Image 1 (cartoon, rainbow, N blue to C red):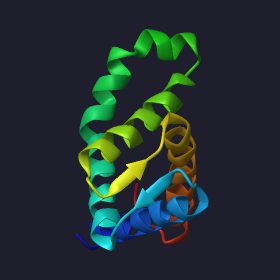
Image 2: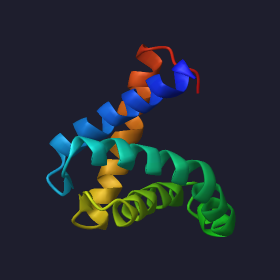
Image 3: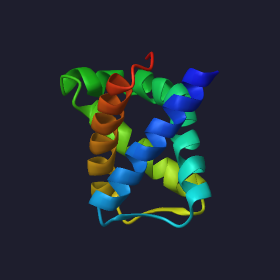
Image 4: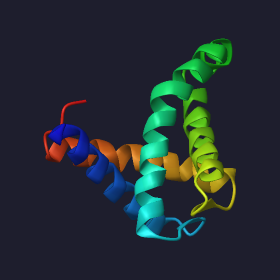
Length: 115
């Protein structure tokens, strides 16, 4: 349980860093940051595998690069579901998804949380 809370905190921090770096992303309150992180995690666990399976031919055709588009779509969907999480467009969501993945990977490796 402690690992889960630590990963949630690290991913929330990663999302905060992304919000500060990209002007197209805004989070109104701290509670919205925590909720957006939780929603992103749930979307990545439950919705993303289904979308990847449905778009498998396109993903194979693009040698896996379409997965980056799917990650951006997960960010857009999270912004739609969380009222205080705002993204100006798909380009901002795409870049944010890349940076969020990078930062959360680095933070989780530094703090030794299990994947």
